[in-house]
Length: 262
Image (tube, rainbow, N blue to C red; front, top):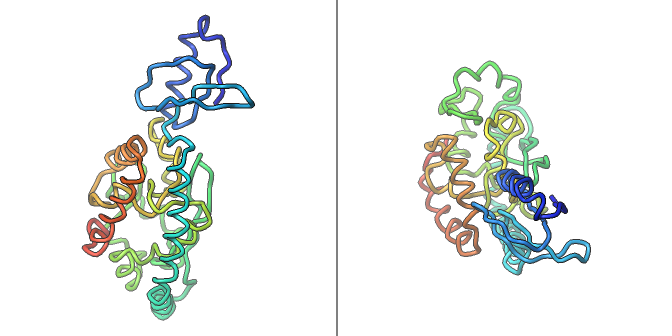
């Protein structure tokens, strides 16, 4: 969002606009004056050859952001190669266990609230999406998400895949294509996003969604929805390459233990 109002005569209005955009996770560009902000970082930038001060909750376009993408590409390529034998076994098990496709493809909400097609190994019966409405009353998670521990739609093989997070393997393709990152807030289904009831929750879409994040290493489905969203914003506000590396290392034991998986 570019604000070109005269700062002196529109100070209150400009400050209010910056606050609103900050809450939504939008980057703001204004003439070269500073404002006090709660979360956003200010840095000098340019827009159409005009020097501006940029306020943003996302990392600034610096070497670290480029390095993050390089790590995503290298990490997803290695993972796809190394995990290919396991992926083949999972695909065969799914095919033998229940009728239907091997992969489950669903619209998810990503960076800047753009939708993309997320790919997972299918862990539910083919009529799972159609049966969602009849199960809504059994939802065990407060907030926008939908989770029940003994979901009747999940197949026998699906329970094993979910417990070990093996159903997530195809998402390395989403990382490789640039729709996701190795680390970032988990991509939510359109249904969940439409249930958001606070503007601050939309700030999670100011970064790419990821395979793992603070939620993944802190209990997953044992954490309620609001705390889950707060962990996502904590990640965004404190992002660094070292934080990404720390989360990746903590994800491996969390997955092996099946912490909070369902």
